[in-house]
Amino acid sequence: MAFSMNGGGSSGRGRRAGSGSLAEINIVPLVDVVLVLLVIFMLTAHVMEFGLEVEVPKVKQVRNSAQELPVVSLTKDGEIQLNEAPVNINQLGSEFKRRFPGAKAVYLRADRQTIYDPIAQVVSTLGAAGLDVRLVTQPDDAGSAK
Image (tube, rainbow, N blue to C red; front, side, top):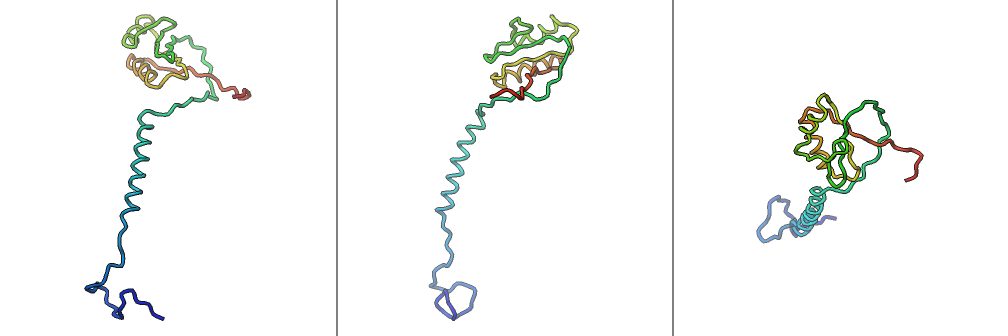
């Protein structure tokens, strides 16, 4: 039993005049997929730009330090304090060098709800002043209920 697609018995490979095309490309599913990808991209680009709210976990391993170092505190509202005295970020390096001339390192204590940008600015300012910045963390209590 033999089947013929072209309606004739010739075995030629080329198209014959008057015969319709056998394979048509359907563009509609392609357009649908492209539009769905565009919508997904638009939604994820918004999330990537503004970020997601992430609660940073407590650290499991804490190194106890007995060093007496100055402390720069950063509140969740963006207030900066140098050993409990308010200070402007633009004057942080010079104020630190004036109050602690021999210090080579500093503790940075930031509220866990502080956004990353102020923390990065403070770390950058202290690093530009030639200081080793050490972050203050809290130990993770394994037995505590969340």
